[in-house]
Amino acid sequence: MRFPFIFFLLASPLLGQSSLNKNTDQLMQKKTAGVSPVGKLLENIQISTLRTNAERGDALAQFVLGLRFTSGEGVPKDDCEAAKWYRKASEQGQGEAQQCLGLAYAVGRGVVQDYAEAVKWFRKAAEQGVATAQSNLAVSYTNGQGVAQDYAEAVKWFRKAAEQGNVIAQLKLAMALDDGQGVPQDYAEAGKWYLKASDQGNEKAQCYLGILYSEGRGVPQDDAEAVRWYRKAADQGLAFAQLSLGICYKKGKGVPQDDAESVKWFKKAAGQGLADAQRNLAINYMLGQGTPQNFSEAYVWSSICAANGGKEGPTLRDANAKTLSPTALKLAQARARKLHEEIQAKNGKQ
Image (cartoon, rainbow, N blue to C red):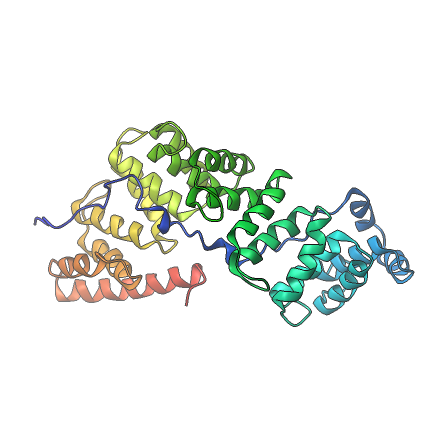
Protein backbone atom coordinates (compact mmCIF):
# COMPACT_ATOMS: atom_id res chain seq x y z
CA MET A 1 0.00 0.00 0.00
CA ARG A 2 1.40 3.40 -0.98
CA PHE A 3 1.16 6.55 1.11
CA PRO A 4 2.02 9.38 -1.30
CA PHE A 5 1.29 12.00 1.38
CA ILE A 6 3.94 10.65 3.73
CA PHE A 7 6.97 12.84 4.11
CA PHE A 8 9.47 14.00 6.64
CA LEU A 9 9.60 17.72 7.26
CA LEU A 10 13.28 17.76 6.65
CA ALA A 11 13.87 20.81 4.51
CA SER A 12 16.56 21.57 7.08
CA PRO A 13 18.25 19.19 9.50
CA LEU A 14 16.12 20.63 12.31
CA LEU A 15 12.50 21.60 12.60
CA GLY A 16 13.33 25.11 13.83
CA GLN A 17 14.89 26.35 17.03
CA SER A 18 11.47 27.20 18.41
CA SER A 19 10.92 23.47 18.84
CA LEU A 20 13.75 23.35 21.36
CA ASN A 21 12.25 24.87 24.47
CA LYS A 22 13.98 28.17 25.14
CA ASN A 23 11.63 28.95 28.00
CA THR A 24 14.14 27.90 30.62
CA ASP A 25 13.82 31.35 32.19
CA GLN A 26 10.72 30.20 34.06
CA LEU A 27 12.95 28.56 36.67
CA MET A 28 15.66 30.20 38.67
CA GLN A 29 18.89 28.38 39.37
CA LYS A 30 17.65 26.35 42.28
CA LYS A 31 20.93 25.11 43.62
CA THR A 32 22.40 27.13 46.42
CA ALA A 33 25.06 29.66 45.62
CA GLY A 34 28.60 28.45 45.36
CA VAL A 35 29.82 28.07 48.92
CA SER A 36 33.10 29.76 49.80
CA PRO A 37 36.10 27.62 50.87
CA VAL A 38 35.56 28.64 54.48
CA GLY A 39 31.88 27.77 54.12
CA LYS A 40 32.84 24.32 52.84
CA LEU A 41 34.88 23.76 55.98
CA LEU A 42 31.93 24.79 58.14
CA GLU A 43 29.72 22.27 56.36
CA ASN A 44 31.66 19.53 58.12
CA ILE A 45 31.28 21.01 61.62
CA GLN A 46 28.93 19.29 64.03
CA ILE A 47 25.49 20.83 64.09
CA SER A 48 25.72 21.79 67.78
CA THR A 49 28.89 23.80 67.20
CA LEU A 50 27.48 25.32 64.04
CA ARG A 51 24.30 26.38 65.84
CA THR A 52 26.28 27.88 68.73
CA ASN A 53 28.36 29.96 66.35
CA ALA A 54 25.27 31.00 64.41
CA GLU A 55 23.47 32.09 67.56
CA ARG A 56 26.51 34.16 68.52
CA GLY A 57 26.06 36.10 65.30
CA ASP A 58 28.63 34.49 63.00
CA ALA A 59 27.20 35.26 59.54
CA LEU A 60 28.95 32.43 57.74
CA ALA A 61 27.77 29.93 60.35
CA GLN A 62 24.25 31.30 59.98
CA PHE A 63 24.42 30.78 56.23
CA VAL A 64 25.72 27.23 56.50
CA LEU A 65 23.10 26.41 59.14
CA GLY A 66 20.50 27.61 56.65
CA LEU A 67 21.96 25.23 54.10
CA ARG A 68 21.67 22.40 56.61
CA PHE A 69 17.97 23.12 57.15
CA THR A 70 17.45 23.32 53.38
CA SER A 71 19.09 19.95 52.77
CA GLY A 72 18.03 18.22 55.99
CA GLU A 73 21.64 17.28 56.72
CA GLY A 74 22.07 16.73 60.46
CA VAL A 75 18.76 18.46 61.22
CA PRO A 76 15.14 17.95 60.14
CA LYS A 77 14.55 19.57 56.76
CA ASP A 78 12.77 22.85 57.46
CA ASP A 79 12.45 25.56 54.81
CA CYS A 80 11.09 28.13 57.28
CA GLU A 81 14.03 27.63 59.61
CA ALA A 82 16.41 27.78 56.64
CA ALA A 83 14.93 31.10 55.55
CA LYS A 84 15.26 32.44 59.09
CA TRP A 85 19.00 31.76 59.15
CA TYR A 86 19.53 32.97 55.59
CA ARG A 87 17.89 36.23 56.64
CA LYS A 88 20.11 36.66 59.70
CA ALA A 89 23.22 36.10 57.58
CA SER A 90 21.86 38.27 54.75
CA GLU A 91 21.25 41.20 57.06
CA GLN A 92 24.93 41.04 57.93
CA GLY A 93 25.83 41.24 54.24
CA GLN A 94 26.66 37.57 53.60
CA GLY A 95 26.32 37.37 49.81
CA GLU A 96 25.70 33.65 49.43
CA ALA A 97 22.94 33.82 52.03
CA GLN A 98 21.40 36.78 50.18
CA GLN A 99 21.24 34.67 47.03
CA CYS A 100 19.56 31.83 48.94
CA LEU A 101 17.09 34.17 50.60
CA GLY A 102 16.26 35.69 47.22
CA LEU A 103 15.65 32.22 45.83
CA ALA A 104 13.40 31.39 48.79
CA TYR A 105 11.26 34.42 47.95
CA ALA A 106 11.30 33.65 44.22
CA VAL A 107 9.92 30.15 44.65
CA GLY A 108 8.00 30.62 47.90
CA ARG A 109 10.12 28.21 49.91
CA GLY A 110 9.88 28.86 53.64
CA VAL A 111 8.45 32.35 53.01
CA VAL A 112 5.50 33.78 51.13
CA GLN A 113 6.44 34.09 47.46
CA ASP A 114 7.40 37.67 46.68
CA TYR A 115 9.24 38.46 43.45
CA ALA A 116 10.05 42.03 44.45
CA GLU A 117 11.67 40.81 47.66
CA ALA A 118 13.53 38.16 45.66
CA VAL A 119 14.94 40.83 43.36
CA LYS A 120 15.99 42.92 46.35
CA TRP A 121 18.15 40.11 47.74
CA PHE A 122 19.40 38.90 44.36
CA ARG A 123 20.62 42.42 43.66
CA LYS A 124 22.45 42.71 46.98
CA ALA A 125 24.23 39.40 46.32
CA ALA A 126 24.81 40.20 42.65
CA GLU A 127 26.48 43.48 43.52
CA GLN A 128 28.86 41.51 45.71
CA GLY A 129 29.76 39.34 42.73
CA VAL A 130 27.78 36.18 43.56
CA ALA A 131 27.43 34.66 40.08
CA THR A 132 24.28 32.63 40.75
CA ALA A 133 22.55 35.74 42.09
CA GLN A 134 23.65 37.69 39.01
CA SER A 135 22.12 35.01 36.81
CA ASN A 136 18.90 34.92 38.82
CA LEU A 137 18.64 38.71 38.77
CA ALA A 138 18.97 38.51 35.00
CA VAL A 139 16.15 35.94 34.90
CA SER A 140 14.01 38.36 36.90
CA TYR A 141 14.64 41.10 34.33
CA THR A 142 13.93 38.66 31.48
CA ASN A 143 10.58 37.61 32.93
CA GLY A 144 9.62 40.97 34.43
CA GLN A 145 9.14 39.35 37.82
CA GLY A 146 9.60 41.75 40.72
CA VAL A 147 11.09 44.32 38.38
CA ALA A 148 10.14 45.92 35.05
CA GLN A 149 11.01 43.64 32.14
CA ASP A 150 14.29 44.80 30.62
CA TYR A 151 16.15 42.49 28.24
CA ALA A 152 19.20 44.75 28.03
CA GLU A 153 19.55 44.75 31.82
CA ALA A 154 19.13 40.96 31.78
CA VAL A 155 21.97 40.65 29.28
CA LYS A 156 24.16 42.86 31.45
CA TRP A 157 23.76 40.55 34.45
CA PHE A 158 23.94 37.33 32.44
CA ARG A 159 27.26 38.56 31.05
CA LYS A 160 28.66 39.29 34.52
CA ALA A 161 27.74 35.80 35.69
CA ALA A 162 28.89 34.18 32.43
CA GLU A 163 32.30 35.78 32.74
CA GLN A 164 32.61 34.10 36.14
CA GLY A 165 31.94 30.74 34.53
CA ASN A 166 28.28 30.34 35.50
CA VAL A 167 27.07 27.79 32.96
CA ILE A 168 23.40 28.80 32.99
CA ALA A 169 24.35 32.43 32.43
CA GLN A 170 26.63 31.39 29.58
CA LEU A 171 23.73 29.56 27.96
CA LYS A 172 21.30 32.45 28.47
CA LEU A 173 23.79 35.02 27.18
CA ALA A 174 24.37 32.90 24.09
CA MET A 175 20.62 32.61 23.53
CA ALA A 176 20.19 36.38 23.84
CA LEU A 177 22.95 36.95 21.28
CA ASP A 178 21.48 34.26 19.03
CA ASP A 179 18.04 35.90 19.09
CA GLY A 180 19.14 39.53 19.34
CA GLN A 181 17.16 39.96 22.54
CA GLY A 182 18.48 42.86 24.59
CA VAL A 183 21.66 42.94 22.56
CA PRO A 184 22.52 43.18 18.83
CA GLN A 185 22.24 39.76 17.19
CA ASP A 186 25.68 38.19 16.86
CA TYR A 187 25.87 34.53 15.87
CA ALA A 188 29.65 34.32 16.22
CA GLU A 189 29.51 35.69 19.76
CA ALA A 190 26.59 33.37 20.52
CA GLY A 191 28.67 30.44 19.32
CA LYS A 192 31.49 31.47 21.64
CA TRP A 193 29.23 31.34 24.68
CA TYR A 194 27.42 28.19 23.58
CA LEU A 195 30.84 26.55 23.34
CA LYS A 196 31.81 27.66 26.84
CA ALA A 197 28.59 26.25 28.27
CA SER A 198 28.90 23.12 26.13
CA ASP A 199 32.39 22.47 27.43
CA GLN A 200 30.87 22.50 30.92
CA GLY A 201 28.45 19.80 29.80
CA ASN A 202 25.26 21.82 29.35
CA GLU A 203 23.11 19.77 26.99
CA LYS A 204 20.98 22.65 25.68
CA ALA A 205 24.08 24.63 24.78
CA GLN A 206 25.46 21.56 23.03
CA CYS A 207 22.29 21.25 20.99
CA TYR A 208 22.23 24.94 20.09
CA LEU A 209 25.87 24.71 19.06
CA GLY A 210 24.90 21.80 16.83
CA ILE A 211 22.23 24.01 15.25
CA LEU A 212 24.79 26.72 14.49
CA TYR A 213 27.10 24.21 12.79
CA SER A 214 24.21 22.65 10.91
CA GLU A 215 23.08 26.00 9.55
CA GLY A 216 26.50 27.67 9.31
CA ARG A 217 25.51 30.61 11.50
CA GLY A 218 28.48 32.26 13.18
CA VAL A 219 30.62 29.18 12.51
CA PRO A 220 31.61 27.35 9.33
CA GLN A 221 28.83 25.03 8.16
CA ASP A 222 29.89 21.53 9.23
CA ASP A 223 27.42 18.63 9.42
CA ALA A 224 29.89 16.32 11.14
CA GLU A 225 30.53 18.89 13.86
CA ALA A 226 26.79 19.40 14.21
CA VAL A 227 26.35 15.67 14.72
CA ARG A 228 29.13 15.61 17.32
CA TRP A 229 27.33 18.19 19.45
CA TYR A 230 23.88 16.71 18.89
CA ARG A 231 25.22 13.37 20.09
CA LYS A 232 26.67 14.86 23.27
CA ALA A 233 23.30 16.42 24.09
CA ALA A 234 21.35 13.35 22.98
CA ASP A 235 23.46 11.10 25.20
CA GLN A 236 22.42 13.33 28.11
CA GLY A 237 18.77 12.71 27.24
CA LEU A 238 17.80 15.98 25.53
CA ALA A 239 14.83 15.02 23.36
CA PHE A 240 15.31 17.65 20.67
CA ALA A 241 18.94 16.62 20.23
CA GLN A 242 17.82 12.99 19.92
CA LEU A 243 15.34 14.01 17.23
CA SER A 244 18.00 16.06 15.44
CA LEU A 245 20.48 13.19 15.54
CA GLY A 246 17.81 10.85 14.19
CA ILE A 247 17.18 13.26 11.31
CA CYS A 248 20.91 13.40 10.55
CA TYR A 249 21.00 9.61 10.28
CA LYS A 250 17.84 9.65 8.17
CA LYS A 251 19.33 12.11 5.71
CA GLY A 252 22.94 10.95 5.93
CA LYS A 253 24.13 14.40 6.99
CA GLY A 254 27.39 14.31 8.94
CA VAL A 255 27.07 10.54 9.34
CA PRO A 256 26.49 7.62 6.94
CA GLN A 257 22.79 7.23 6.14
CA ASP A 258 21.35 4.63 8.52
CA ASP A 259 17.60 4.13 8.94
CA ALA A 260 17.98 1.74 11.86
CA GLU A 261 20.07 4.27 13.80
CA SER A 262 17.56 6.95 12.87
CA VAL A 263 14.73 4.87 14.33
CA LYS A 264 16.74 4.29 17.51
CA TRP A 265 17.02 8.04 18.17
CA PHE A 266 13.45 8.80 17.11
CA LYS A 267 12.27 6.24 19.66
CA LYS A 268 14.24 7.90 22.43
CA ALA A 269 12.81 11.33 21.62
CA ALA A 270 9.30 9.96 21.04
CA GLY A 271 9.39 8.34 24.46
CA GLN A 272 9.99 11.79 25.94
CA GLY A 273 6.82 13.13 24.34
CA LEU A 274 8.26 14.98 21.33
CA ALA A 275 5.50 15.01 18.71
CA ASP A 276 7.84 15.44 15.73
CA ALA A 277 9.78 12.34 16.76
CA GLN A 278 6.54 10.40 17.26
CA ARG A 279 5.45 11.37 13.75
CA ASN A 280 8.78 10.38 12.23
CA LEU A 281 8.75 7.08 14.09
CA ALA A 282 5.23 6.36 12.81
CA ILE A 283 6.39 7.00 9.24
CA ASN A 284 9.31 4.62 9.65
CA TYR A 285 6.92 1.90 10.81
CA MET A 286 4.57 2.63 7.91
CA LEU A 287 7.32 2.40 5.32
CA GLY A 288 9.35 -0.33 7.01
CA GLN A 289 12.47 1.83 7.05
CA GLY A 290 14.99 0.91 9.73
CA THR A 291 12.43 -1.41 11.29
CA PRO A 292 10.05 -4.10 10.04
CA GLN A 293 6.89 -2.63 8.55
CA ASN A 294 4.21 -2.56 11.21
CA PHE A 295 0.97 -0.66 10.64
CA SER A 296 -0.22 -1.29 14.19
CA GLU A 297 2.86 0.43 15.63
CA ALA A 298 2.51 3.15 13.01
CA TYR A 299 -1.04 3.70 14.22
CA VAL A 300 0.08 3.79 17.84
CA TRP A 301 2.75 6.43 17.31
CA SER A 302 0.73 8.56 14.90
CA SER A 303 -2.16 8.47 17.36
CA ILE A 304 0.13 9.61 20.18
CA CYS A 305 1.52 12.31 17.91
CA ALA A 306 -2.02 13.52 17.23
CA ALA A 307 -2.80 13.56 20.95
CA ASN A 308 0.30 15.73 21.47
CA GLY A 309 -0.83 18.23 18.87
CA GLY A 310 1.37 17.06 15.99
CA LYS A 311 -0.23 18.49 12.87
CA GLU A 312 0.43 15.42 10.67
CA GLY A 313 -0.68 13.03 13.42
CA PRO A 314 -4.40 12.83 12.58
CA THR A 315 -3.75 12.23 8.87
CA LEU A 316 -1.21 9.51 9.56
CA ARG A 317 -3.38 7.94 12.25
CA ASP A 318 -6.44 7.77 10.02
CA ALA A 319 -4.45 6.35 7.11
CA ASN A 320 -3.03 3.61 9.30
CA ALA A 321 -6.44 2.82 10.78
CA LYS A 322 -7.65 1.86 7.29
CA THR A 323 -4.96 -0.83 7.04
CA LEU A 324 -6.03 -2.60 10.25
CA SER A 325 -8.77 -5.09 10.92
CA PRO A 326 -11.41 -4.05 13.51
CA THR A 327 -9.75 -6.30 16.10
CA ALA A 328 -6.24 -5.05 15.34
CA LEU A 329 -7.45 -1.45 15.41
CA LYS A 330 -9.07 -1.92 18.80
CA LEU A 331 -5.85 -3.37 20.19
CA ALA A 332 -3.77 -0.56 18.67
CA GLN A 333 -6.10 2.07 20.12
CA ALA A 334 -5.80 0.54 23.58
CA ARG A 335 -2.00 0.39 23.31
CA ALA A 336 -1.85 3.99 22.09
CA ARG A 337 -3.91 5.21 25.05
CA LYS A 338 -1.82 3.26 27.55
CA LEU A 339 1.52 4.30 26.06
CA HIS A 340 0.44 7.93 25.81
CA GLU A 341 -0.52 7.93 29.49
CA GLU A 342 2.82 6.35 30.40
CA ILE A 343 4.75 8.93 28.39
CA GLN A 344 2.78 11.78 29.95
CA ALA A 345 3.36 10.45 33.45
CA LYS A 346 7.06 9.82 32.81
CA ASN A 347 7.59 13.36 31.56
CA GLY A 348 5.52 15.05 34.25
CA LYS A 349 2.64 16.10 32.00
CA GLN A 350 -1.03 15.97 32.87
